[in-house]
Image (cartoon, rainbow, N blue to C red; front, side):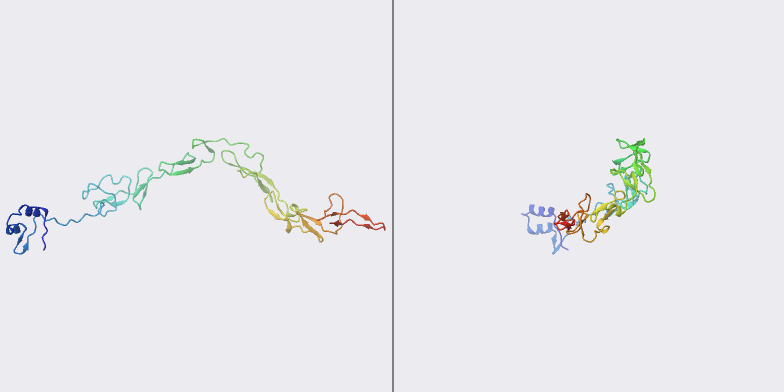
Length: 280
């Protein structure tokens, strides 16, 4: 076994440099070829485990076997080992409105009754934003709390169907009869007036092309699928018009020529009168 020299031994040998080599050998612990174990020998030190001693719980600075820090259960729940290896049982109940997160073994804050009497957005005592609404019959005032409400008696304002906001709740304005629709007003409410939809033939009357919208139920029709122009006529600007050479009428409101104009009748002098036709 190899001996290790301490700083004390080395210093002693240095101070006695003038002493005979044999005497110094004795001090060094060398005799008969076998070294002595040094009295000042430092053993190798093995460092302790991490601060929690392998535990899964909080650190207990004053480690006392069999006794844990009484404050370890503040804000905690469930069972865990402290840093001394003592088992701590904090139970499953938390103070106040807290609930036990068993996975984390921590008591977490909850505010289940925060919205009672409150309205709008606010931050509860757990630091969480909540959006609260008032019950029917109350109104949200500017301070964020629900109060008494007086409904507006003119909320429907002549509307006979749908719902209107009367300041306290949604108020029914009536219902429509069979085959009727509630034509909505352009407001945030759904209230409107009852109406009967038109047929596509009614909406496309006089139109051979283009889209039309029923103002009652907002249904859209393509008039090119409803009305088609007769032979020798063309659809132009959503209306049927007469092709060139087709008989026409100069009377007001008569069907127009697609191109050119309707020529007036002419007498060539031989007793024959040229008919009214569409000419370029």
